[in-house]
Length: 460
Image 1 (cartoon, rainbow, N blue to C red):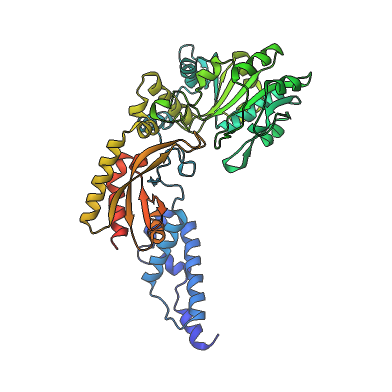
Image 2 (spheres, rainbow, N blue to C red):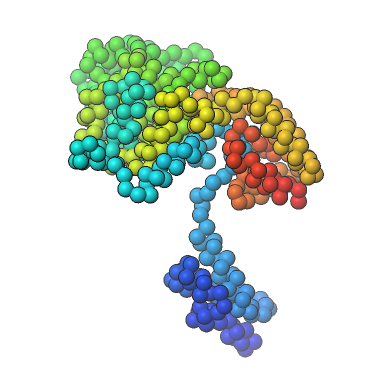
């Protein structure tokens, strides 16, 4: 380092001097002294590296303060933020699955911002049980004897198997040894629970006799797992739940069903594939059904067990039950969401059902109106037919007709990236030289900011 470099470095302020510079006291008040000191050290170290490796002049203190503010903003910038989902995937696992009814969120805010009757019986003035807040609604909706809510469906399945099947064989068809997102595998869950996997049948064909031949004195249960994110078609078959219920009952074994999707209503009226509802599964003789709260149910992340009161009593006593229990916010949101089903207002109040039930004419009107507005700003926009998908590991292969807003640009990848890092981020899908957006999954309150963001970046 020569003399001129040393002199240039001496022009940088000390940390103490920087802390007394104009505007820094406000940063200390907002971000805290420790973080501002850390940021000051990082910014000054960066400037020392620049000055040693270049012929730059030392910055004035105001420039350093500006960089300090940028550093602090970057450190505390949230990585979890709201986005605009223009992909057409209704239950988008990577974008938080099901959006929640704002009314349910308001109720959760009221519950969580103060004290609540989470585990307090207001009638008797004694300790109560948190599970009652959603279970009575679930019992009404599904016809179950009892219900239990935990923090997600993986936990529900693990808890069910741990409590009922430890050191026992669990019979399952090879066609149902599934893996879903995040590496969640049924065989791994069985192993973790302490149960012993007993595979029967083949990938495409499993017969009732395969189950009957596998039952022995070590059998703990028969498990059926919904093939949530794929289909086996062609030369294939598997026994019905009714048939499995008969052989399970004859051997005094529980029939357990990982339904997964949380379908509480028939979807065929919307042109989607028929999905067995939780109520129908219980009526077919299933003893316990496990499903998610944030898929087709349209509520918060939760795992729900519905069915036999005696089996759920054993599950509640298991030590794992406390470790995976649902919190007050999830219970509040879930309860409000279930009320929409009970009152028959799910198409109006639950966002995913508004999306699923939205008419093609309504979607086309939105797409045409958006295209017209964008054209007025010089953007090459058009409307084309396409498909939405339910997503979230529900109804694999089922598509809903939709109309897409298409934007033609020279490089759609660059525009897509700009939109992803905007505030709020806008997520679409690329097809050739087009960037496509599906009005079905863009929430009504997001429409204007969506269009403003498109104009901001597409008109460049």
